[in-house]
Image 1 (cartoon, helix red, strand yellow):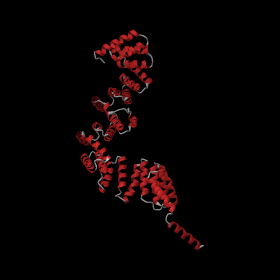
Image 2 (spheres, one colour):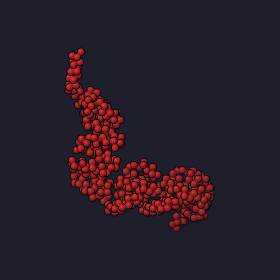
Image 3 (cartoon, helix red, strand yellow):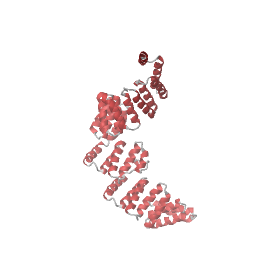
Image 4 (cartoon, one colour):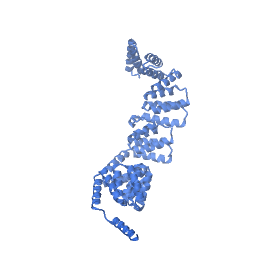
Length: 452
């Protein structure tokens, strides 16, 4: 029995020590070719065969996971990593690297960094891992850590793309002199590199506003919680088309002063510029907003109103005025929020009901809008605007007789070409052609005199 056991052991050992057969060599060659050709479906099938025949071979597992990741099958790659870890007694460092790659693809950047750190601890000069780590730190907005990874990478080789990335990183930290030095060095190394060209456009646009930005940097350094200064700087970044830095400042300003509107508008514009328009909904901002739609007068007014509201948080009229401004620039959701805040402080404010109704109309919520404008006319019978809006809503409801009455009351309070035009339409609808013509003539006379 002892002799038989010895024979079996020696046979097994010999089998383990035998090199791969010609068939397996051909299989491995076919697998390598499939990976080179990026035929990942084929590569996955071949890699499974190689792993089945050589489960202790680290290289076989590496190629399997490469193929699965190439195919975009993150779940399968994750499963293969788990099986590799439990099957091979001494897995290669590539296992930890692949584990980090999978975590990164799952947007778990902290886990990715932990896995890659294991490899870097043994191989600190691994340029590939330093690049990956820099990217993960960037995703987590860890600017100091990203800079450290890029600096370590550049110590291995001065590279144009890495230089430009560090320039962009230092711009994030507002270290303008260091950023410009890296930017110029990147251009010296390879001005035609796509990353360098993209970065160059960022710095060229920033250059036009950098003197003003540096002045605000100095002021913010002494008053870091001044939301108005942060919003001012966000506006400069928007004008320089640097949406990333604009978003950073606008978000900080909004967190410091949740009652303000200007930072929220700047957040939305930055998100739109970054291709993240869907995120505007949570801000209550219409995603069609652009900086070109906000006049200098509006920006000055909204900044003043934000500042005044910060001092008089219970002043209903300030919220009504801001709601009117927001309605004028096509932001009904924000206007409704301000109108409702005004009503909390003054439940009998006709002006708040007017702005709320106007905004609700823009959102297509006509029933609620009519209910609100009726309340406004009940509260403020001397408000021409309220009767005008009420008349237009009655027209939309098909009640032209009621609309004529409302529009007539509006005209009794204030003559307006717009109201005359609407009443002429109503007269036409109910067959009062002569009265419709009278209103049209009056409209033409007022328009000729330049009256609004």
